[in-house]
Every structure is written in C-alpha cells, then in structure tokens.
Amino acid sequence: MPVQQQPEPIFNQLDAFGHKKVVFCSDPDTNLKAIIAIHDTTLGPAFGGTRMWQYKTEADALNDVLRLSKSMTYKCAIAGLNMGGGYSVIIGDSRKDKTEALMRKFGRFIKNQNGEFITAEDVGTNPRDMEYIRMETQHVTGIPETIGGTGDPSPITALGVFMGIKACVKEQFGSDSLTGKSIIVQGIGHVGENLVRLLRDENVKVYISDINEERVGQIAKKHGAQAVSNNNIFDIDADIYAPCALGGTVNTQTIDKLKCSIIAGSANNQLLDEELHGQMLVEKGILFAPDYVINAGGIINCYSELMGFSKKRSLQLTENIYEATRNILRLSKSENISTINAANKIAEKRIADIKKVKSTY
Ligand code: NAD
Image 1 (cartoon, rainbow, N blue to C red):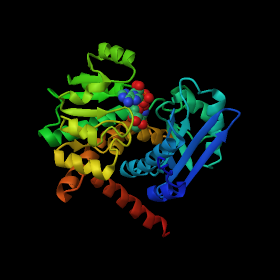
Image 2 (image 1 turned 90 degrees about the horizontal axis):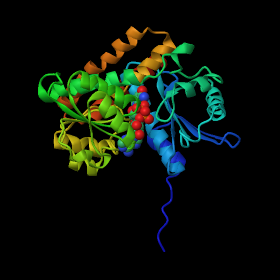
Image 3 (image 1 turned 90 degrees about the vertical axis):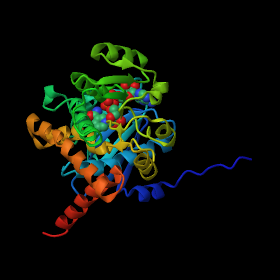
Image 4 (image 1 turned 180 degrees about the vertical axis):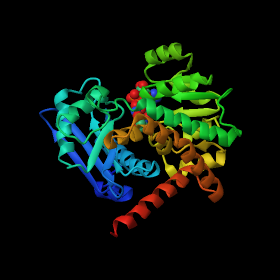
C-alpha cells in the first residue's frame, strides 16, 4: 500500500514562516473561500494584495498566501514604508466565480481585521474589485481614479522593475544602457505589458510568452516584440529573463537551462527555494534582482494613495529602486552572499531597528 503523505500541521507552517495571524474566511452564500495572512506588523498595519486563483489544493493556497505575506514584510521594510506584511488569497476562477457579492463579503472580512490588514489588487483582481471591497471597508487601496484612488498600480510596478533591470545591467555590463540587450518577458499581463512598452521604447529586443497565446499575438504586434512558445522560453539565448507571471519559476530545472546573465521581473517569490536557488544562481554567475525589491512600485503607489502623496512623489520613490538594487548588489558582493540574502539582511535590520524605537518612548 502506498504511504500517505501527511500535510504539514498548520501551526508548524506558521512558526516556520513567522506569522502573527492567519484568518480563514468562508461564506457559503457567496461561495467565498479566502485566506488572509498577517505576517508582521512591526512597521505598521499589514499591507498586501488580494490574489484570486484556482489553486489545485487548499494547502497550495495556504502555502502561497504565507509566502506572499512574508515577502510583503520585507518589501515594505526595504522600500522604506511604514507598513507590515500581509496578503490574502481568494480560491476560485476570477473569470467565472467573481461576483460583487463575493468581493463585498470578502471586504467585510477585511473590515473585521480592524485596520490590521490593508489590501490592494493582485493577480485575478482589479480596481473594480477594490471598489467593491471599498463599499464595505476603508482598508483597501488601488481603487479607481474616478473615485479618488490611484487606479491600477501595474504601470508603476513595471517602472520599478525597469529600474531594477537597469541596475543589474549596470552591474553585469558596466553601463545601464539597454541598447543592444535582449530580454524574455514571461507573462504579459498588467505588469508584463507595461514592462514590454518601456523596454521597446529603449529598443530592447523583447521575446514574450504567456499561457494566453491570443494575447501574446496581440501584444507582440502592438509593441514589436517577438512571440515565443511558453514551453521553450528557457531555450532562448537572451541577456535577461523577466518572470512576470507567477512565482517559483526559478528552480533547479530552469536554472540548469537558463542562458541569461540577469533575472529581474515582477513576479513575487520567483525562487522556488530562496537558499538553494539563490546560491545556485551565484554559482552559475547569474545576477538575481530580488523580486520584492524591484516590484515594490505598485505598493509604493498604494502607500502614496493611503498617505495622500502626489503622483510625483510615488514616481520618485519608485525610481529609487535603482539605487536600492545597486546597494543590495554591492552588499552581496562585499559579503559574498546571494542577492536575496543581502536584501533580507537590509530589510531585517530596518525591522529590528524600528522594533527598538517602538519598545521605548
Ligand atoms: P496579471 O494577472 O495581469 O498577469 C499575469 C499574466 O501571467 C497573465 O497574462 C497570465 O496569463 C500569465 N501567466 C499565468 N501563468 C503563466 C505561466 N505559467 N506561464 C506564462 N504566463 C503565465 O498579473 P500582473 O498584475 O501583471 O502581475 C504579474 C506578477 O507580478 C504577479 O506575480 C504579481 O504578484 C506580481 N506583482 C504585480 C504587481 C502589480 O502592480 N500588478 C505588483 C507587484 C508584484
């Protein structure tokens, strides 16, 4: 008889990730099944997206929300925001299962967190959904511009990724000019398309892939990019690989195939295993731009919405991603550690320092 593998007990998982709180939200009337994970609130309320995705199992959904919320703690810390880390996932197909009632019910669960969790859009959600959540709670950002929000954060996220790519190109090639460089953009959704536009404006040779092949054709035509099949992107010889779909695409199998010298994209949690794959990339001489550092533009935009900052201020903060990435690359080199460990070190130091401030008065 095959040995049945037991799932990891939930509290063990929370301990491993260092979470403060996880809320399971269930509402049979609207078919809502969601998880809100609050990782750390040292710097401020937990801030993070709401992802709607058809997870294969509930364990996959839990694992995703735990990983995403932890990286938000680090993302906010390194971007200099006074926010902690959280995330939420709604289990379901965003094209078929999303209704106003479901989103508003989810908004009520956020309301019940009394400001400890503030959300924004992510994969499978959009400003309209944030508007529904806003009907039930104030603890949401990324609402449409027409009702006083900053709208879709994706263009500014793409700008941050673009700055991160430039910082890496400077490190690997001695100049941050992108002229003559080539890049594979995997996933040409909200962020991916905006990134393709910025890259094409600098005449970069751009290869694009997506599971939605119809969209690949449209975007290739619109921006003068080259469409490639999602199955063989790792066979392409390009300078940069930009994962802009989902996480975990940098793993033992793909690292073996990768021909690029830089990985820099918007997807959260690109390394399947931070320690193992971060180190493998160092050994292969591939520079990895820590995802949570270079994809912080969107959260900076949402933070600006909360704080009432101007558009100019959010653009300045996002452009700072260039210097933040350069600092991480320097630390990684001087201490001979992976870039993800260098970024973690800077983020953890800020959290530890502010903890000391908060323990005194
Ligand atoms: P999106 O849903 O608009 O786009 C994702 C795209 O990836 C879609 O076109 C989808 O078809 C494609 N895709 C999904 N699985 C794929 C696969 N296996 N291979 C190839 N393509 C695949 O999402 P988005 O807002 O553009 O976000 C993209 C990534 O960036 C996500 O990981 C998200 O968490 C991250 N991110 C987004 C923002 C933001 O401002 N939107 C901010 C920070 C991080």
